[in-house]
Image 1 (cartoon, rainbow, N blue to C red):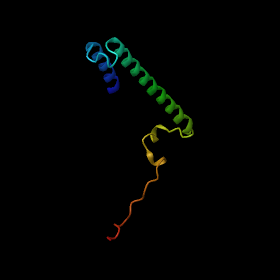
Image 2 (cartoon, rainbow, N blue to C red):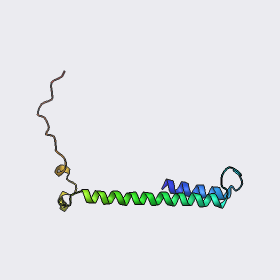
Image 3 (cartoon, rainbow, N blue to C red):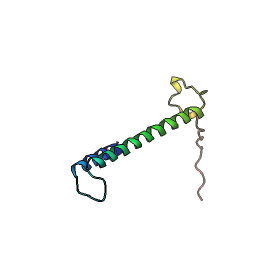
Image 4 (spheres, rainbow, N blue to C red):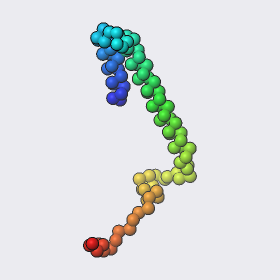
Amino acid sequence: MPGLLGGLTAALISVTSYGANKGFMPAGHHQAVYQIFGMLVTLGMAIGGGLLAATAVKTVTPSVHKLQAEHLFDDSMWWDEIEEQETAPSSL
């Protein structure tokens, strides 16, 4: 969200500050179009990367472990639990 807000703000500022950087960078509506296009390309790449990662996780993760409702928040199936010691270890 900060990137989208920054891209929209930069596009708006580039339109309102026409001629401030005359000769150095595209100004006015040209710069606004570049800003919005760059924002849309970035958003598209982020969505594409997220979909690719989700597909990879779904493919790699075994679907054998369908959890029942009572096991949804129980991590003991995925992690080894360490038994507590009866006595404290001796000091060094």
